[in-house]
Image 1 (cartoon, rainbow, N blue to C red):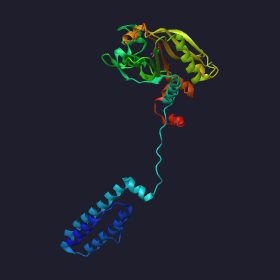
Image 2: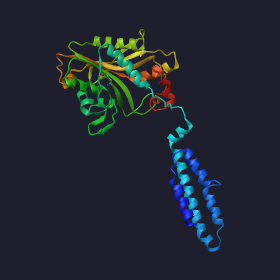
Image 3: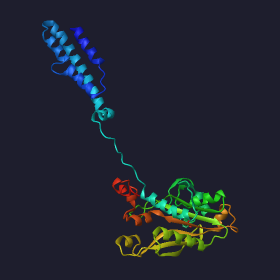
Length: 335
Ligand code: DAH
């Protein structure tokens, strides 16, 4: 009896089971009614007296071992994709392709327009030091102007940049003149999150430094942009404003009207939507970046991307751009 039991266990261990077919063969050989395990039981039944007692336990252990081999192989095959694929001959999987994010799309569209005007594209770090984000841009230390932008500090004098104007400083410090660049990127402010504002958003900064650059160059560049981006008949207005790094400073609005509900909402009932801040680079800023302000002048602007994207796609709540909901993002697959 012992030989028979050992022999059966050996036989079952020798089987390699790597496919469902081999698994089934194993079952047919050992575990069905006419299989080898049952055959062993039949023989065991013919034993009598003391022998029956001794071998009863062993026969049961052998059965359990063989069943365990079967169960383990079955489990492994059921979690093994390749065998499932082999067996079911499925067609290839199509994983969902991602798409360009609508904000990236708007940034690219803006960039193209400025590139046609001879602007190149530059980028800078999102974690920025005080010098590049504030001091070089003529925000004196402890000056209330810093409160215009609620800052996320990362360390002492290190913060998440509050605007892309910091990249202007980095470009000017390089000292390669003239400069005609746009600088798209993400910026951060510690603001209450709502449908209209978020703790991070996107800007496209612009900077043009050369000899004899004037405010009319600034206006013409921005008019050109607006006509290309929003359409030839778009009305614009400049409003005098204040930024520490430009003098004079202005903000530019485009006219949407208040006919549609969303235009009324976006423009807070005025019909006008502010899309950028701009101005002539303050001579102090040029000097901070080692540019001779007597020889060179320049203009700068900072466009807000997110609100323009809301306008373009009729998005009512800014937050939907960023909560990674595939149902929302799939609508932009063909951009
Ligand atoms: N940095 C300003 C902001 O985030 C926007 C801005 C205004 C940028 C005037 C400029 C500028 O370059 O000249 O509110």
